[in-house]
Image: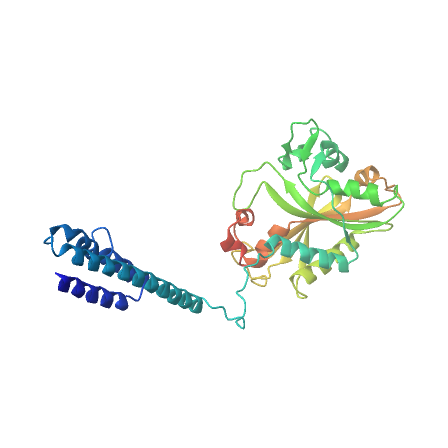
Length: 344
């Protein structure tokens, strides 16, 4: 029986030396040193030996058990060290490699257009003036020549607040009153400003209308300001925005706060005026509403209409962005869809 123990020792040592990984070593341990392992079973079988062989057999079985446990511990440490070295080598960082690029956000398409507006109007002598988004009814309507119950108020679906007479502005035009009163120094100073900002209207959301949108209002007040000044200024803006070949046309229109009033169209830059789907085959694209500041509005802003005159205009950055890039649904601007936003 002692020969059987020696054969078991040789076999176990060979298996231990052949183990190259923690998984194989764990399987070896279960086979030889586990609760039901072959070495443990050999130790327990001493009671079945003849009485005269028990002492020698038991002693040798325990010696083999201790020897294999010691060899197992040494082999375990060696395999752990080898695996650690391998992992370190595999995960080694090459500091000479370029760093991974960091994903960065981009500017919103409306912001691109707004920055173009700021740049162009700055070259024409206009400064940016920011007005409030939460307005009172008087400044948003009445002081702009919208008397109470005037039919023109129905042109804009107003979002009211729970506080009486307080609304979300429906256009940037109330900034005209605030700009004249703040910068005009009691109607004694000329001003040239643009008023960018978000507007809100209680409208059904469609491909062409939203409950919120950007506008850029423009206001020029001075002495001897005429319609020709307005037309020339708008024409210069169109050339800077759409290219030196841009052609503009003016159509009579109506706004309560300007008189006379006109719509401004630019020749379609996509088809060159030949007619296409974007311009509805008319060859022209509407870009602004404008006119000479109404005398009532001038007076409400602190100016004497007998001595001062001016012009005003309003433009939609989203609309111009849609025209420039062939975007056919205004809802894309506020849907936060990265597939759309990452194109700009």
